[in-house]
Length: 116
Image 1 (cartoon, helix red, strand yellow):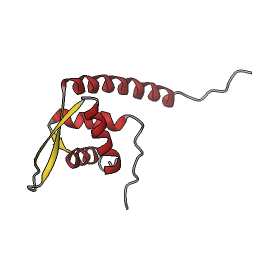
Image 2 (tube, helix red, strand yellow):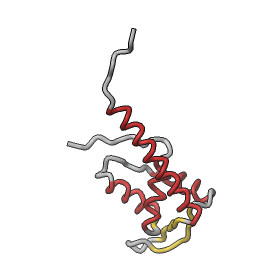
Image 3 (cartoon, one colour):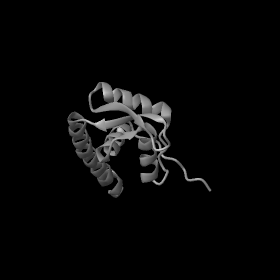
Image 4 (cartoon, one colour):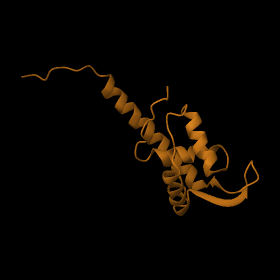
């Protein structure tokens, strides 16, 4: 039986791509696979989302790219994090944990009737 896939929340793709590239420079396919494998295939990153995100992050100078050879000897564009990208990742990570904590508090609270 196939696992149900989860929808990405707005803004989380950039954060996860930056995280992947903080570990090491990589080409787009490797970034997508890292996210998919890291989430046990609950998140699938489609090319139609990934490559526009990479180009957007490059325009914002969070990442830079250069051509290289992939593992299977193909020409591939490798992306790496810039200092600006590292700062963005740190800010987004802090904001994400605050958001997740706030949602956890709300979802963990008991339902009570409103006073009449």
